[in-house]
Length: 467
Image: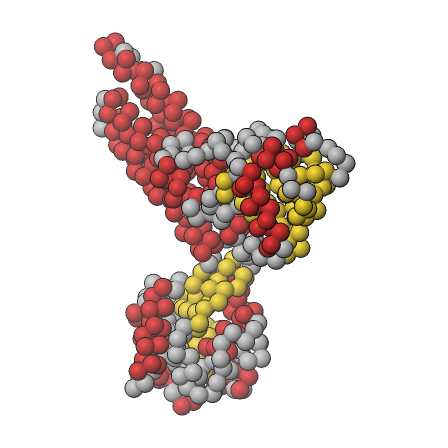
């Protein structure tokens, strides 16, 4: 892992735009940029103060490539902890390419994915969980995922882990010290205080582990399957939820033969809606494949929205109950919302009678709406939001969203519980110390006190180049 050379990359998205930013970091960053930068006021870049901006031209062999602004950040007071130069140029792809290639010819190396943030971690500017939060922040596409990423990047999660690790480390040191005086049979670590600490750590770990359920949902979005018989208005409902013509709507049964997915934010939470093929018996091979996919998507979804056509109520009351029970029986644990669509085409008396029949089916929440007119669609959104426990988010509590952290927390909890059991069984200090060391190891995995090149490679490979 090379970390002592000077790297360069485009820090803004590739393609044409108003401006682009080219980032350079390393011990020769200022020197390399200075070689091709001519200040409008004849300043020497290397002699300027840190955190200053300078106007001038990027040139090669007396040929101007672009008029730019150069921002100077001298280490260690920079993002990476090294000397960093950021060149703000015009957003022409040709200009971007010319400046990057010029700096490569000067001696820079093209940066790999996440290499600037990797250097920030290696130089102590961020811990590992904060570095991972940078990628989450860039990927955030709703208010909730942004809020969690910001909290983690500020160190909310890692500071809690570091505090627990430090307290556990203090006791571990005392237990290790006891081993040096085994013949004297002395105890430096107060066992009652140690038990209290272990209980506190266990409680915090369980809370963090439980938060992963909501954290994973917030980070990846909640999949919602919209299902029902053909022509009940599934595609119309998807279009109404998205407020755009995303799915083809037709009176011909079986129009939707494949799943259509799109995501929107409701109350700051991402919801991924899946419009599925209508469930019915059919001899059409293509439609049959679509129906098979419908049941696969139901399996993958977290909430089922089952649509009924209110207009067909009088002709098939029994079939309604049959279809509902068929889906609910196969997925009894999934939240189930029954949506009676096309209420604009029935009168209130029919609606009341339909509500009475549906009431006989236990454990089903029912909504009446018209996807065509939009009446009741906002009520469906509010109902869906109620399935997400946003209390922890509203209270600004620490929420785990990273599966690597979740795995490390599970392993740490297992070791802490082993220590508690060893204490209860009256085992010797050397055996207790082994489990304590393992718990400390898993804590260290989260914040980066313990790392490997493979681990860092896996984490930063998912970053974008230039960050």
